[in-house]
Image 1 (tube, helix red, strand yellow):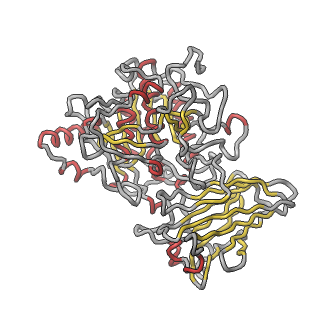
Image 2 (cartoon, one colour):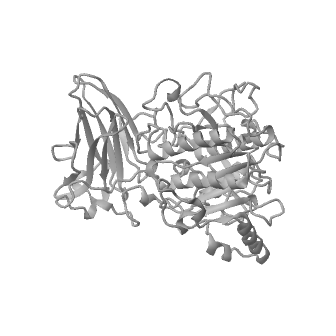
Length: 549
């Protein structure tokens, strides 16, 4: 899921679009990004790359900037744990892309190329591409060819793209029509419902990052930056989900190989997320003497399913967790079978409680679908419905808990928690070990300090301590950033940590191209804050020792 949709602000422009101020805030001058001492590639795992936009073609307008492109929607879902042979995937290399781009440019029509790969097909989000495909925006911000007053951060970088086959319904426990997948579940036949999904366990993302690295090796580049302007909120945020482990393993193995001269130095940049003002996170300590509770609020007009995950420490003695449905008693969510959630004789959701999921953490997952709620559940004055979660502890020790509402973009669609805590509201991929996690700030605010972008998610990492908890690592410009608008020759603006990731990826690529693939990057040292990490990311403040100047 994209990391700018909740706070996006798209608009067409008649003035020359420019990210000059944002690039300057990253330490990039007007000449940055020109060819230098190293070949660098940027890999994008995203949705919708317009191969015909002038910013994603070469300066002459006849060659694609993409050297490889894989549309996962054209191949079966793949599992990287099954000894996947990436050479068997149906993808397009630079020669084919160049031919198709040249043919479309010569004919003046994009129809034939769109039949091969349409950047507006298979995009995520129930509202479609709105003002353009997200992948086009991100690729142009990071590396766009100079055009009409616009340029990306690293216009000389090679590009590799993966169009994810991961629409909303594939990780939200709903079908293509938005209907809950548990509607046809029969507890008598299957006491435990097996339909739970997780964005941070998606094999599509794992396959994508391995594909990008494999193709970068084929290109023979000196360095690779993988751009992850994607994310969701549910999950443990413990760095140990399948996707987070996959990212950490890839970075470790790739850089061991690079040190031996067998592949590119590899850097992954991920976004903190845009949940800073969503009221979607609760945290607290539960003791035997001090139980806790919080409310989960939903709206009558909400047409979408809502999901809540509660994670807590320990598994030997499960916590007592109850769900209070308005008008009926508290339902105990004990470990074991999946619980039906019923109101006025109608199933309105399901829940389960699993102990020892991983690393000593246990989890309660709850799904509720407001369109199925009986009218009596809603408060007539507020048109909302509140569910109370009760948390009791029979252990001697203090137990930490965190709860996250899954991402559900839109004003009408959102549900929220009360009380809520903005800290530790990072997205589910932001806590991957070895990844550079970037928050967003408003570079246009002026003043000596970074301008606050309220939507940007805050740290620290919820379960870690010391340096490992200091996420995000850095912040980058994320407010009113220009990017190429797909299926046009124009541009639009967006706000969100997606843009912060793209600009940081491009800045790193430009810096490594000029300074060499082995050049040091800023270190995450010095003062840290939950909102800005160790401060704005700047590639012009790196001393020869590798310390941030």
